Length: 113
Image 1 (cartoon, rainbow, N blue to C red):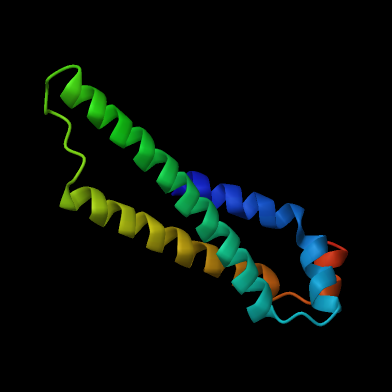
Image 2: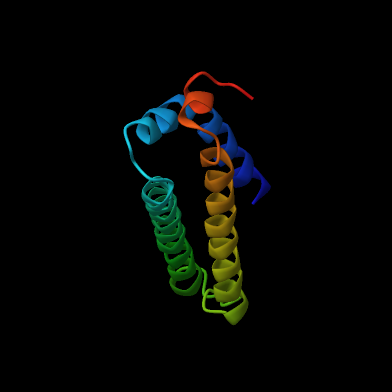
């Protein structure tokens, strides 16, 4: 979560000028936040799907080739952890976006503090 927080924060710092331009042309904060949250959620779901496919592959290898069942893929704790991480990323991203978009378009475009 710390890595993702810093990644999103540094990305928003790099695109402040673009966000300021969008605000200057009349795009509301709510619309910008919705667009970026959709992108972030999409990346998270794609990464989760890829990880799930790899975990299923490993689970299949372990059961059919190694004849072992030590790896538990279907577990309530895994689901709860995934939900917790998803919610943390969602609310953390929303908070960061709100913090950046509170500034005026001029402050964002000209990188004023």
